[in-house]
Length: 319
Picture (cartoon, rainbow, N blue to C red):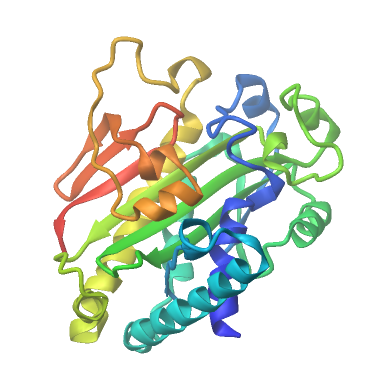
């Protein structure tokens, strides 16, 4: 059951709020009109997982050597099952070492601190974490709210298949909850699914990436994350919350005319995520883009804005 659940997390993350990133722009800036009409905003964190997992890309056996078809699909599923089982076994020591650590709490703390600086958002004191990230449940959450909008911040955290790379993803979406704000949605929106990303007054994707020394040996890499009571993993997850929350809030506050890179902004090599297979399955400029504009720098790393508006914070050096 655990293996099935963790496999679903990446699928649900890519389907968040009933939208495909290829159908609508990744980044939707918040209009001045919408900002002035926000009377109260609830904050909801859909986080399906309660523990870290290893991303296991689907096997390509069926498409590369078996000609597809039912037999190929059956063998493909069997390979995925074995590979997922091995990944679950490999990550168990890290899960055990993190049993008393809560990424939920870390993210809540950082979001509260950052959102408190945005008076016009009128964010309440309730930052609810929900495990059921289905459209139906999020629709019910929206309908039950008395706020004029809900800021959904879906979070996902995982190790790459080789275990050397930790990725934390936030998908933020400010969904209207009254007729006045709904009237400000983009022309292309979804009236059937209230929490569809196309309905968001604001949305963007944020990625945090950090590494341990790459060896090509998953068990060795996970042992590095797990050592000393998982000190490296704890530091990385806490840093992810600490770096991404302010970036989200800064992006949310940017004026419509100031959200994209200047036309003559220089783009630099931002490095390609080691999870190349994942990039092929679920492309994301923030995760897979090779070039980006440097948005900010600090002693720990750099934040990049990609051409689609998405943002990645890259930790410099290994943990």
